[in-house]
Structure formats: C-alpha cells, structure tokens
Length: 550
Image 1 (spheres, rainbow, N blue to C red):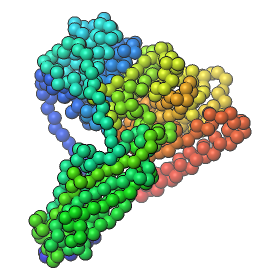
Image 2: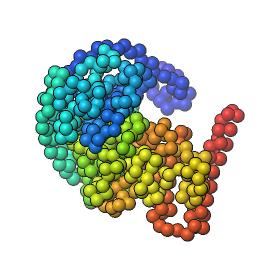
Image 3: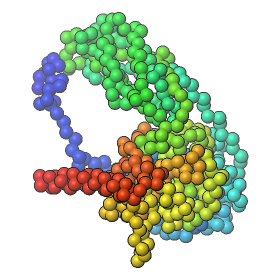
C-alpha cells in the first residue's frame, strides 16, 4: 500500500494499516506415514509431537500400581524429552496399563515402562530398550523400557535420560549399558556473547531492525548492581543520516538507552548497560537491540542495503553477571526456583498416590518435561515415589512435588493442615467443616479449582514442598498447564495459585496457616479475601454484561 510514489512520507502515516483478525486460523493437512523403528534416531519422532488437535502424543504406560523405580523412570525420561524439545505445553500423557483402551492406544505413540511380569505391553522384551511398531497402529511406535529388577529398570531409563548416551543407539534394541553423564559446564560470571553461543549479528537497509538475545541467569544467582552488559558495535559511516539513525536497547521490555549512530562510534561503538537487581532476574532475560537506520535523502522505494548497515560483535560484546549466591523467596513468580537446582534435577522428588490415576500420572510427566526445559545438564535424574513409602527424614533437603489430593495421597492427608490452602473436603452428611479451615475462598470456587502451592517443607525448613492439587481432574491438568517453562514466568504473586476454568489468581495466604491467629482475626482476614474475590467477580460480570450488550 502506498499513498505517495516517491519519498518516505508514507512511513508512520495512520491512514496505512493492516489488521490480522482474531478469527484467523492455521489448517494443516496431515497424512499418517510409516515410521521405521530405529533407536539411532531417538529422540525422534517424539520431540516433533505437538498439542494440536487430533495429532498423536506420547503416551506413557505404567503398571497399575507403579513402584518408585517405575515412576522415577517415567519422570526422568519425560524431563529429558522436555529438555530436548523445549515444549511450552508437553504433548505427553500417562496411564496405568489396566486402563488402556485399544482406541486410545491406536492414536498415540506408546512408551511402556516396567518388566514383562508387571506390564503386559512389555511381554517378551529383553532388559534394556526396545523400539518396534505399535501393535495398535502400524504408523505409531512402541518404545519399551524394561528391566527385570529395579536397578535394571533404572539403568534402562538413565540411557534415555542421558543425552550423550543416545549416540550409541542403533537398530531396534539397546542392551543395558551403564551411562555416565558429562559434567555440567561451569558458568562463569563474565562471558563474551560468543562464549554464550551467539555469533555476529548484522542488519541492513533503511528502517527498523530488531535483534534479540536470550540471557539466562542461574536460579541460585542473585545479580547485584555491579552486573552489566557491554555491547560493541560498528555501522556504516558516510552514508547514514546521523540525525535519524540510532540504536535503542531494552532489557526485559524496558528501554534503558538510546545511542545515536555517528562517525564517532562507526568503527568501535560501545554501549554499557548497568543492570540493577530489579531489571534482571534468575531465569531467562531478554536483551533487545532496536536499530533505526536512515540515509541522507532516502527514497523508500529502495532498501539501501549497501549504504545502511550495522553489526554487533559477538567476540567483543560481553555479559557480566556479578552476583551473590542465594535462592529467591518461595513465591509463585520465582518458579521454577528452587526446583531446578541442582541442574540434573536430582533433588526433585514427585510423590503420588499408591494407585495414581491417569490424570495424576499425566500431571507428573508433563511437569517433569517442563522442568527439563530449564536445564542444560547432560543427564537428568528426578525421582518419584508413592506416598506410602515417603520418609520425611530421608528427604530433609529435597524438593517434594506432591500431586493429587488428600483423599488418595497420604502425604497430603498428613500435612493438609500445614498447606496455605487446605485440600480436605468436608465429609458428606458429617459435621460441617469449620469455615476458617476452608477460607479464604468462597464456596463457588473452593471446590471447583486447581491449586499450585509452594511452601517450606513442614517436616524440614531446609526442604521445599510444592503441591499440585485439584478437586476435579480437568483442573489438575490446568494447574500443570499454568506452570511456566523456560522463557516464561508466572505473572502472579503469592504462594498459592488458584486455577479455575477461566483464570489463574495468585494469593499470599501462608500467614493464615503458619501462625495461630485468633478465630475472629482469621474470619476477618478471610472476609477481606472473599470480598476481593467478589470484587474481581463483580468486575468480570459487569465487563461480560457490557460486552454482551455491545
């Protein structure tokens, strides 16, 4: 679209616009094709799976009453797949073998865990890894992780959960083999952009150009005011219009500097960005360099690719992460900290019911995959066990991730009174549960929500407890979906996320459980919080009315 045939007067003219309608959609026509079994291609095709409707997923099939070794195998393999695929929402599901139906099995690739004696789908499989065509669908794969004993099963799972071991895979079977993960790379305080994996970036032509650099800060580092980014650049000299050409720098979306591109910085330009602790945080941060290039007497019918250019040097630019060691507070906005320290996830322990449901198993493998996106360790070693085998004394410094509800998960039943938001339902036809135990949520929400809670472990202040709970299985899946992945953060504060079908709300209600407040004070605090929910609901109702009216 042009209003003027010459010059650049069209740039920024509000009469020229384009709108992409919200009803736009992507339609992909797919054809099922045969995938030959070959462990030499692992982790393909599983890393290419998506959550698009009607697309195949990877379905973990475990024994009906999985042991700690079988659960650990599923968690470690899922974490490794998440690390490799960087899924935002992992296309993973899990189910006990006794609940698997032929129609469901035909839709998905299957990853079977357990010995032939405990899992019927592993019948005839030798210890180790076996990949073959699924008996339910010739265009799907079935990967068996088998071991006659718990140590054998763990060794087989470690082969899939260690990226450096994949290069030894070939054919349809891999015998058990010990694996030794490569040592994690040492992260230095100061590194050049080249050492961080970047190369020189070049922009050409008049107009706007954007360069983005993801900068990852370890989760046990707290940057200090001595942290800085040094950007070294060069650009065209004679032809650029110095009045209009500039480079703007943004850190996590906030502008921090503008630099005019002049003859004084054309060969050895330098911009130092001081980073305050409020500007940069543990996890993924973004440096955005926006170039606006113009030449004298330019005509927008031409690009001026030779006359207008700029280069950011990877060898000379650097990041200095001056820091102190320490864990962020146990709050939702700091997740996944502390769950991704150490980098191999070996301090993470999933705790499920003795007979976990498909929804609870699915929650575990999806959350493990999400945690995997945050780490670059060669071998991932999260653990899992059932609540009836949980020993607090043996996990005093671990990060416990409890999934489910107190009705089936005995760990949650035992420590429910210590949770910021209790999960125990009032007994049917029994004495009414005191309202202060179920505050601060109103009745319309409290029994129809999922919960994501973080708190110091009640049995050891050196450990962490994270709870994924829900009164309805679909909301358990929504609670897992709300958990962030690398590059995203929860935009809510507090220690409890209340997940409803419509929204995710953050609350800080730990003080209601960590201290023994008088009943009248507890009721007052609860009333204030209920009032807040009612106010939020009222705004939502009024907004909906206005929208419907229009």
